[in-house]
Length: 504
Image 1 (cartoon, rainbow, N blue to C red):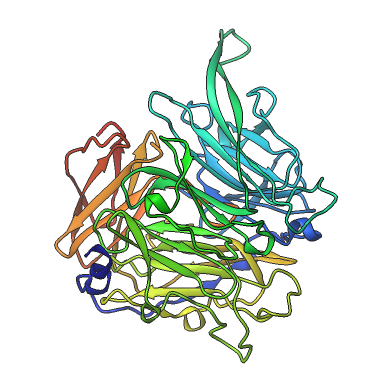
Image 2: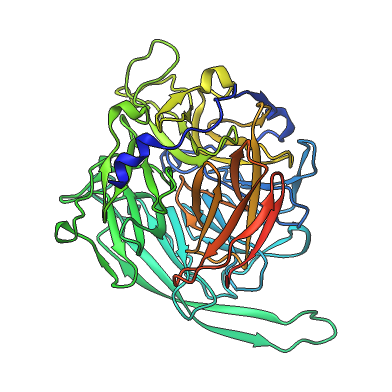
């Protein structure tokens, strides 16, 4: 059975000591702040917007302006000009108009904004030019996928509480929007305008019911079908509310007749990763109290046993025994041993007395038997600020995943990974074909990662895929396209980057 295979994963090299160095002072001081509309959100987007191979950081600010920090190398960051945007809950990087340049979809408590990416990390508000519905809701979730025959993404916009409902906030969850590309207008170039300008147009439809979503992820599910997963906050559930799955091809919510009975959580964030090399992603759902890892088994999911060590349900440091509150979750191979690990950002909503106030972030290392071990304290990343969004990314190009965290009412955190790690490779899919899967194999087994936009909590990354390969001298890699076409295996040596054509 596929789920049981997770506990007998092939043994790799012995676990190395994981250590991070606090480099938070490398970032200009920035705080995600605000009233009740910013208890949630606080996302961070990480992507390379100037082509130098080093990731930049876009951070939501809530009532403070959002900010963009350019990566100048050696853990030196400087602020870049950005249209002034307040009310920002988070953002996701993706190519909205198909021109090969990363743009930003910016979520807000208020009208959302689409920023078109330009030369050297210049961004311009193109919401009106692209005729993208900004809405006026309280947007807290986002994901995207590409429909067959389209060259631009379809967008899913997830809203939280209906701020205009006088009966709110309890029981007043808002509905969501699906925005589909409908046409592309091409303007002729002239001597002054420069390259041809592309203007996209999207049409919107409502997706309901909504149960106060805090994360969305469009990805291939255990059935092998592209599915929109929606994680919802039970605190505001209306009758029948639960985690939702929406079949993208059939455009309908799955139910018990499909083998899906969504768990009821205080759902905050989603992370998806193939943990055992079988080509199907496991899914982590963060929550207040137990974090739920769903193991892909057959055409559905089973809850991970407590013994796997993934519930992270209480603070692992200090004497506060009340439940944890999990937000952003992200898988990444922190020690490059070939086994994905898991970071969970934690923090009380504000002053919720039933949950822990001193709630350190979690770093769960996957061990050779498929179980996970908490190491955040000894690794140096167990911060107790009210964390929200986060990202694992190699900020200095040394092949080790570093960490950035956005906190509510506290400055951001940034840590450099200085672990004695194993070998790695990175794989860039060009164009970045959402819904495809990269497969990698070494003598110790298979790994795979999907190319997705969404998940996490209020923010995500658009970077080459990072794989740890332990002591292997290299690996073989191939791309499986969204329509199932399988590319040829290609070799890459340890420490190298491979560029894969999305056509195979």
